[in-house]
Image (cartoon, rainbow, N blue to C red; front, side, top):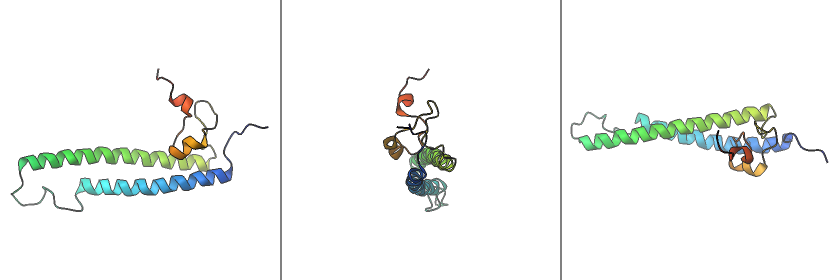
Length: 126
């Protein structure tokens, strides 16, 4: 039996649907985080009312910083998913970049943007 070197077009189409679904959700989450950061939905302490307290302002700043970190992480996830879509177009999706072997379907269903097989991923860093 010949060893598989890449996923079939129908398998790649399945992965594309999975990735597009995750990408839609990730973009919606990113938009929500961005709205939180820019206060497009409310008038936080940037309101002209002088009644806000210093502690509330500090908590709002901390919350904004945390939202910023989450938004940055979400944007990175979106970029990884978009790169996975490019690999599908190039028909190189699901191939470990270290070993050249196919990454198991089970791993790709859980982490669709994976570029390393689990054996390489679990190796200690040098």
